[in-house]
Amino acid sequence: MSHRFTLNDHPVDLTPDPHRTLLDVLRHDLGMNGPKYGCGLAQCGACTVLVDGVPARACVLRAARVADRRVTTLEGLADPETGALHPVQQGFVEAQGAQCGYCLNGMVMTAVALLERNPAPSEAEIRAGLRDNLCRCGTHQEIIASVRRAAEIMACKPASDAGARP
Image (cartoon, rainbow, N blue to C red; front, side):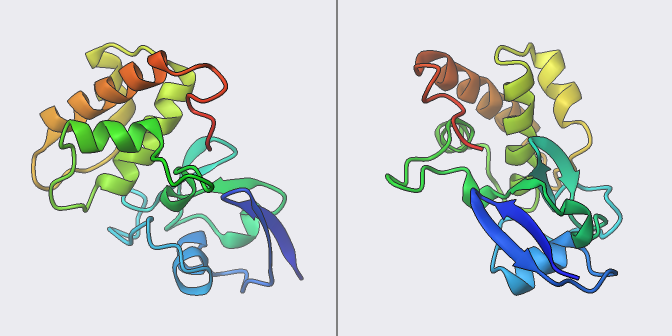
């Protein structure tokens, strides 16, 4: 049975094994390497993608469950025409929020969803929004600064540009 979904604004038709996870399909069939295999138990956040704009753990989500849905990966955040980074990606670059890279995908994808819901979060709201993402190397302060910087960037862009993707 074929399943159609939208991946980073492009239609995809798949006939996945009903037991395969979305992470497996994204990485092995579709070449999306942003989401990472971390724990395999939905505990660390490394595999986070957005499904209809909501963070989802691709390591436990069956690929068939995203039929007729919109999936966004880290690769789908940048502007496809200009290559310009999404404001959250730019915030992480400017505030040096990446260290080893283990948590980066999950932090960025979760921050995108957070800032879509709350464009001016307090530090406590950022901490609460990112609490389910594990950072192994302890760059928590830089990550919080990155999300704050992303919020500033988004606030300065016209509504049609800020957060236009996912």
